[in-house]
Every structure is written in C-alpha cells, then in structure tokens.
Image 1 (cartoon, helix red, strand yellow):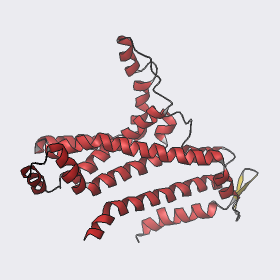
Image 2: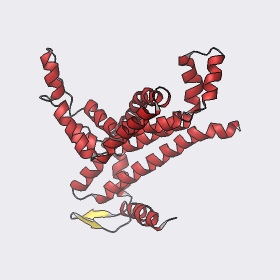
Image 3: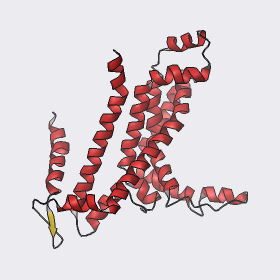
Image 4: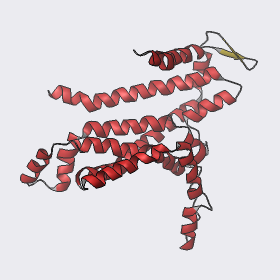
Length: 268
C-alpha cells in the first residue's frame, strides 16, 4: 500500500475511530473511551431521519442523473461523428475546470424569486415559483456536480459495445427500442451501474448543494456533521457521522460491484 494512502486515508480513518470514543468536557476535546457518542447519535430521531433523507436524496440524484445521461451518452456513442464526439467530450469535461462551489452558487442567480427563470416566467404571466431552499434546488446542485461525469462514464461503456451484436439483433428483426434494452443496456451494464454508483457517492457526501441551494433545512449528514462541530465543539459526534457515511459508501460500493460483476462471473 502506498505511503500516501496510509497517511491520508488509513491514518485519518483510524484517528476518526479513536476520536469517536472521546468526550467533550467544558468545550474541550478530551481523550476517553466511551460509547456515549455512538449511543447519543444512533438513538436520536433527528440522526435517523437525516440518514434516511441523505440516502434518499443521493438515490434520487443517481436515478435522475442516470435517466438524463443515458440518451445523451447513447447519442454520443452511436449517433454523432467522431469530430463532434470529441468536441462534446471536451465540453463535458470543462465544467470541472471551474470551482463546484462557484457553479452551485451561481444557480442562485437563476433560481431565486427575482432570478432569471422567474423573470422569464413573469413575462408569460407565470410565477414566481419557489425554486430555492428546497429539494428541487438541491437536486439542481447535485446534477451540476454529477451529470457530466455520469454521461462520460456511460458513454465510455456504450462506445465499447460490440456493434456486431447490434447488427445481429437488427438482422433478426429486433426493433430499435428493443435492441437498446435487450442488447445495448445489458452489454453496457457495468458502466451504467458504476456511473450511478459514482453519482450516489458524490451526492451522498456533498455539502455545497444542500447547504447553499437547499438552505440546510432539512439537513443532510454532511450538514449535520458540520453542525455537530459548531454546536459545543462536538468533534466526537461529528466523527460518528463521518464514520457512518464512510461505512455506508463502502457498503454501497461493494453492493454495486457485486451487481455489476457478480452475475457475469456466475454465468462463466
């Protein structure tokens, strides 16, 4: 294992585990060995609600981004010329050249009551619509983060689908839509699943979108972790939240890899 992984991941995780058993006395972090932090957080209704909410938000973001990305990735893989394809791939990469915080915060100009969209709606006699400090705004922020990378991951999977399989399906008079779901989607299953998993992981741990666009109410686990530190310097409780998030993501990643690769191994 590389040294940098030991220093910046394994050592940091070990310290989080140790700190989760410490206590805070007179607003000072004190080395200890107590399960009070785990009992307090796991027994609190607000923690359970926040955990479930965060999972649902991340799942919704993964589902929506996958649904939007597939037609884009399909067209990119099968319908456009190589020159156009290279240009679009480059354009999908360019958002990551700028700060995600800036991109998310700029959505406020578009979504606020006096923003661009509500101004346009006002011209046709609609609105104003409440598009900030809610789930819609949070999803917009999540998609800003994950949609380009989901499209790229799906594209890299679709572009490697064996064209002979598609031609054989057409020769057997398989319709275009049926060919997509019977031939192309199963052949690109690994990339599609991994793209959705990547979207879930990024959304699950994101702080910017639910904070700046979603208004922090109701909170997600990342917001709860920050609030725990701000409220009485409860670093041990924040460590419990962080470890819960890491464990959840490990379970999701393992389940996704099993789903993506498991059936293929059994079939062989």
